[in-house]
Length: 260
Image 1 (cartoon, rainbow, N blue to C red):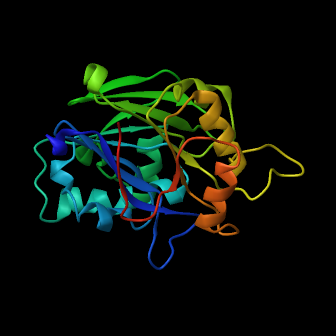
Image 2 (cartoon, one colour):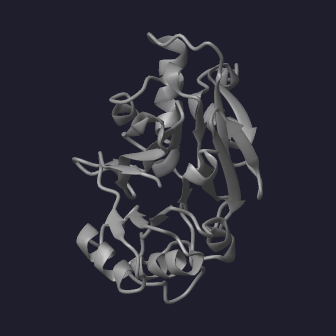
């Protein structure tokens, strides 16, 4: 059935703070009846609720702890514990080391630590981490962003008919991302930077980098996301397409991409 196909819905793709019509980084990945909230940037919870309730999620996966990828976990916590949501169990939350304490630091208002684990069943990521979530398999690799950060490959387990999505999170071009994306159907890749920095460490892709990564990985399709404020989506797509021969699209808010 069409509804069982692996797909990604863009909840938001803005950086470093939300635009009027575009939340920060967040995606709903679904397939085979399984639903995963991937990154929880500012404004994405409201968009998530257009499609699924917190009590209908099978998991949350977080690439790194910068606020434009995590801030709505704070409001999700309140929704999960103190609103009209009735969780059958804490929501599995996959994220970088220290994510539970980071959330508790924000949420705790007294001498008693906020019960983060009552809302989220926390699983810390590491390079090569693999998790089975319902019908989906999530494989995470450590990438280069100046802080602990991860990319993820999500596969629907459908054998030859299955699909594979790779999401870069935020990262400079690196071998780990290229290897993770090898032969994937769709590469959802950030294109934050206009140009590589003249000095200092690289922590983001340019659009050209995104095209190069997609080409080196042999990805079937490239979707550029997390486009920085100094670029338009059209510029990002055009510049990526100059370096990659496959289809290139932009992760517009509300867009849905079927992965196959």
